[in-house]
Length: 379
Image (cartoon, rainbow, N blue to C red; front, side, top):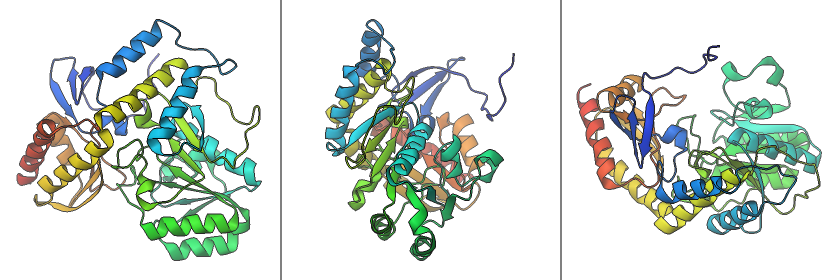
């Protein structure tokens, strides 16, 4: 049997990782400034993370959600305190797409309405409803398409109001990323988010903040939307939540009523996943990683802002989009193959996506800065 070939692969096989570095099967060392799509939040193989997972493996790694699991309670308590959402409830699942699926479904259960508003440039996952609110026709199959999903333009308040005027009575929820990642590090304006919140309240629609990539300290806030003082009805999270271990979650406002069987998952919130997520929160708190994300993000921007071929830098904390005056693919390839540095791209072909671990320091950052300058100087 062969693999189903859906991924364009770089000819690199990482076999070891530590901190912000990877090593391939030939012993070559790479600097990781992408973290596997912003998944690596506290660095590869952080000692505390590693120890906690090893110790849990010697106890119990899995049982279903038909029994009590005190690790789920500990995770919910610590997440509530560190994020500032102590009064919310937590539903645990396995991925960002699954978190978004459950948030969309819970909104519809709550208000009985069926339409969903989403935005241009969005990416919310590849499962049924999540892909239906993702702005990429290439990955939306016919079975996923429905007129219940309505697209509005990013940061366009006038169109947003017009859609609610005609469809508001049927809109169950609005889903928006705290910062668009795949869309090219697109940041919502404070006015735009405030208007969405106002319209959701007026029309009894649930506001879902997708913080799958922009959450967990990456923006310099625990969740990116907290900069604007917006309180959503639900917040979805994954990626950096487990530092590589699959886990996702929905933070749910207390106005939503739970009932037996309303939501469910086989693997979500299993013992290993919870331990991984608890370890991430422990490290974030102990090492001040949210503040470090802001500090190092400022440093990177200040160091590279005057480099040639950079048109703009879109950034909050360590969620960085470097907009070039050309397609970024060759720059990305040169960084990888000539300088052994992983970076990312986006649906905006000119935007180089920078998503290092929140533990990144000046020494590793200077390696990236020097390499980027050398690559851009040669163009």
